[in-house]
Amino acid sequence: MTGYFKANTNDSHCLACSENCENQTCETDSGVCHQGCVDGYWGDYCNLTCSEKCNVACVQNTGHCFQCANTSMHGIFCDHPCSLLCYFNECETSSGNCTKGCRNGLFGGKCESNCSLNCFSSDTYGSICSNVDGKCLQGCTDGFSGDYCDVYQGEF
Image (cartoon, rainbow, N blue to C red):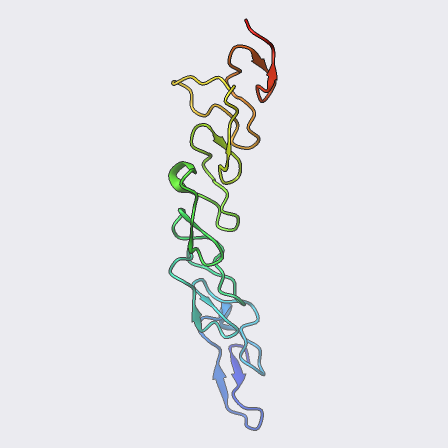
């Protein structure tokens, strides 16, 4: 019978599957939720609550967060702060890489690298180099060329 499992192999008494089992279905001999848990629960029997740090759902067999409720946190339990060098301090749950880019003058997944000092900078334009690879976006200062403004051209 769907939605129930045998409480004991020695008798015919059945119990209802956990209401937290997806579609309220479970293994008929054990009560294990084989189709997963409804959002907010985890464990074989979906009897454990996901951390309040998770954005609603978590991984059934570990309780790890799929996504953090607070976009300024990352990690499997959303207990690590994003880099303060990320714009709006927002990052990806799994990697901690910045999702909105880096503060001016920085690049890299966690904004851990400095743009070339030879990248041209104007106060009216945003970042001076690409958040991804550090290529100078506004050209080079006098005397330098190349994507990274690392080729010295000599005095002008």
